[in-house]
Length: 500
Image 1 (spheres, one colour):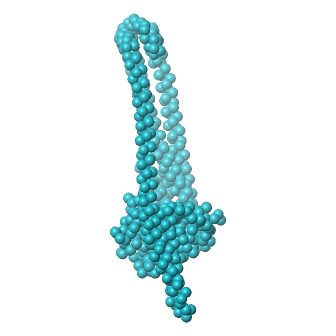
Image 2 (cartoon, helix red, strand yellow):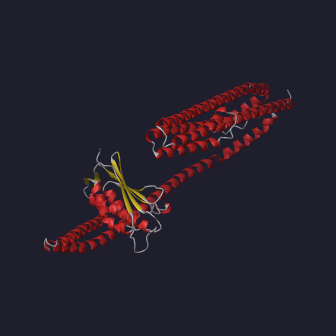
Image 3 (tube, helix red, strand yellow):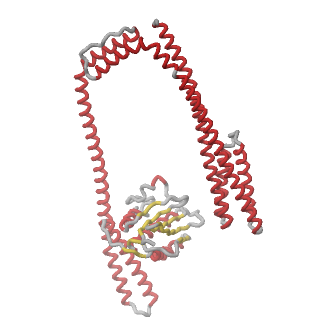
């Protein structure tokens, strides 16, 4: 057979293969789009079934408890389901989807009838609740039917695609068989000969030249292969040399990167060490200077209190209270010394409520002066927490003072309030102190625990309150965190507690 005939046959076979490929690609694209559609509808049915199930539970909960929270949650969940159905309202061809749209509307009407009749008789309420549950069950049933319809269509589409693919593959076998049959004696042997020479070159045997071929189309390939052999032979030494240099450069680069990372880590550690050392010296010096005159004042008050007669009980009680507050102030100064020296003290188990009560009694006059309300939400029985009462008292006091200052910056706030919430989570007790002020901007949340960082005006804040509180919590094997909240600022004090 002449070369021209072979070329024509190859072109014909290539055209047939292209048409078959385009057909398979078109069918595959259609099947892929269908799969995406079914996946989206399946996800929609899963979400709708979840909403319908939640609505059933909330209906049952409201029937039993009649709580306003259940009612609000029900309408919120219905709104989510209605938005979801509206999103797919343009999808056509599904009778169950039409029923789902109608049932969503009926569901709200039944809910308004069931939730709105507070003064109705028990029988009427029971009837309305039963009707609402029945509509919920119908919604679940049609949701399952819709999902089953989608699954059936998906299986049918997959079967059609599979059959089309198999038919295309069976027809496609004729193309390579015909191609191999006609070009076997004209292309296979020269290519095999060139491949053998190429494998020989790959093994590094570059001495013998490329054997000539009789096929015109492959003679140019043979010439190029011969030039490549000569070039490889000439440059083999250079390649080996460059490979060695590249390996050495890569090792040097990795070593330099490792050294750079080590230097950076060392710089960070040195900066932290220098920062904490300077902070310890400063805090320790300030606390030491405060401690000496404070001890003198405390001794004077104690002396006067003992020297007074029992008849002057009112003045004596005032001195006793002053003595208690001076002693507490002395403990705070000692805590500053401990923070500066990074010393650890012995911790023990104690009740947290007396500490909280003491702080509230202390700050009550100040909070009352600014019309700030307080609210305590705590269980009746609480386990003992692990730590030191004086340190915990200081942390709570620091957080309350910060909350007070934040509320004072909002004079237009009608009902300023500080809330204390206590909860037990396994082996930890969580004390939350929250206010309804302006909150903490996200830009500075990562900096508020840094020493000397403050948002207050110069002279009104030192920036040590949260830093000291964090250290005190660490001394008690606890943590101080910023809790996310919708309004105001909220801090969590997490302490270890005795197992229940």
